[in-house]
Image (cartoon, rainbow, N blue to C red; front, side, top):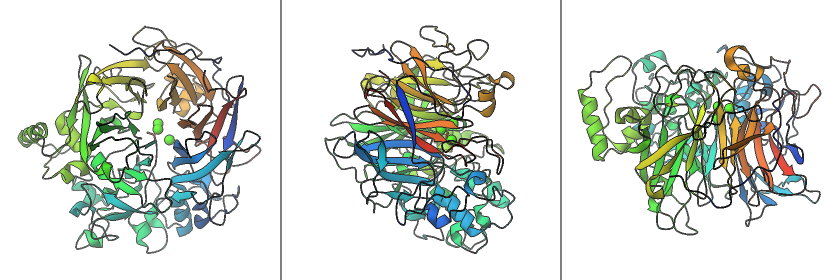
Length: 614
Ligand code: FEO
Ligand code: CA
Ligand code: CA
Ligand code: CA
């Protein structure tokens, strides 16, 4: 049975309508203010943002990155009016980033354009405080930092120093440069920030002969340059750029770039309070398209658990359980380097199993024995694992042989801080033709949200019990939205599709953000008319769901966090004007006029100074 939380809430605002305005809409009694848009100077020489697109690559390294995504507020001394705001910058839109728009032909590219694109990725760490007039402002202090696709990082955990990580940059396999496609983010109980690396595989234009070999580090990861950035084509012979065209032309991995993609697909830890911290790729937590990561609430004397989804069609949900146990005020150090990675199997009867991606575990050994018997096919070469490093390098393949459940694109997770119940968005899976109990809709264009409780409430449990919280979708039809527990249908005041970002706040409100396709927003064909992407508030105990926010044109709403007093909410608006053509922008948010659209944070407060949502 699901735990009942004392003091179940009622949402204290009036649901707002869907809409197509080029603005952020919030309920009556609330104010939304754009903050820290792409290009805002935050450190160094504080180079002014130029709306003509002519900021340089070096200037971009001292400004906010682009395509804001996961966001976490780290209070200073527990305060709700002063802290570090840390956020991910997922990718770049060349037609917005540059004066001259996009170049996806593979022709030689100006190196500074590529440098600017690399420096627009990664994270921003920004000290912020509440000003006398109640607004938030940037503090030009020593915490402010950019981590980008160029920043040097340590390889940490079981992959460190292994043959698979040896590169021309570091033949000892202990260091690499940069982080890519930083989507949802997370944090640790000891107060550090976790960057996820999601669609990194699309940045590497691997040589066909290398792809055809279907090596363990490549076979399940689609390393085909599909992001079309062509960074290798920067017109200079610099391995900072050349590494994005891996092949096996050298005598060994130290002379070519075959292993560069192995350095990506990880979770990366950063201490936002230490500007000199060298980011660590925490390889024990697995290699896949990490959407984000969410910790379970900690218990003294118990291991710590972290959930992370692999956002691709029919991929899996994972849990990492630390070897170390939690103690009040513990230092994290390298705690994330030791533990057990599990992948989820959702059984038809509502139970679930966490299957160990552990080379030494009897269940994994049995899976390897089965694999050894399986006739290989051209799609699925027989997988052989000889060490835990092999398992982690090819986390997806290892999960395949264990029999994990293929999901409808796992995006964000959130954990009820009171009960430990875990929620995960399954954003959509239009191509699905074979359903399973946890992903029961074929052609699932609108997505759903699944939830589970760990056995006996233990984050380290290997069994769990799941059900579906809500099917997103229309008010009627094959993809009607409803809450299976009560049978209640979604209505005009809460229809949504493609759930993505999630936050479970301390007051029991589950915040749900959407990343609907352009057709879903515009009402084309069967995809519906959901309007611009939005954020809803839900009280799972009662099934109440209301629309709280609607974003500007052609954006995605992603990333949400709150100050400890829950009186300020920060959310991110990503890629407004997504369907623009060079020089013809479909959104001019947040500046207005004819300005370029800019991803930005939005500060949401209640006009009476109260708690958000109640
Ligand atoms: Fe970057 Fe799965 O969203
Ligand atoms: Ca997402
Ligand atoms: Ca998404
Ligand atoms: Ca996105």
